[in-house]
Image (cartoon, rainbow, N blue to C red):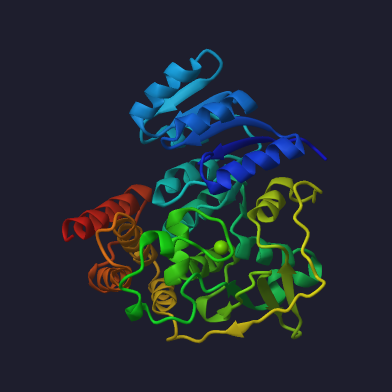
Length: 382
Ligand code: MG
């Protein structure tokens, strides 16, 4: 298998560190690393992988890194646009966008302008600015591969001629249901950020864990799937599947349903994006099939308010998904800071989505301006 040169944006987060484990196991070289502010971990990664380029978003943290590692061996970008500059200048075959939140949008657009591969776990950028990213990729020939487990599963079952998207009838995205599965949000006034972020199955960052608890994660993934696979929202359903062994399914026009299964572990999904179109035996966590029993129960519209809002955002199109995403990022951030209670995430997101007028969007700057103004008004209100 050909060794690839990888650039990891968001290298110190959950997906970023697992990506680097895989790069080491696969013998891939790492030519660029971008992180927010965790320079202790970043410095260890630099020693291990010797990248040519490093980006740090936080200026103070960048200063600390200069002190810790010196800068003779790599080019260092610092500041808010550091990851975007890295995306533009780093020499790599494949860029992994493992950043969290809308701050991954400009870096993704920058990568999409180059004839490389963009493997993305940054769902917020696909939700808010997918149109812009895919338009750039179409011009440059950039290949976009999903890392999110559901989308990786769908991508995998769509490989090969009989599984061509033209035969696709619908997508079925699985949902573990998060830590509060089956509970009414109104009974969850007392839950702490730690409880909400303690996902029963997946090990993930805090924001996506809280999104799993509200089911907004499925809403965002529904929009992500619609954009990645060009499927309208009325042909995507959500099925509760507490074991998280089936990562998602696709139904074809002849009635066949294909599923991708595996241990709930992100390494497999990241690895598929890294090695595509090949597969590799590295860091496998085999699924134990001896006593496997699986539950699957399809949900309907009206059952999960955040999923319904996501459907509405898709139907409205334009800036609507960006509004929904900004409201969610802001509300979850307030919740993680203990400034609001868990059920208030729902009311803030719904109210913001219903009352914000969607402006017309020409480019990423318009989206980012809209995003900041929504976030500012939500945090001012609290
Ligand atoms: Mg997912």
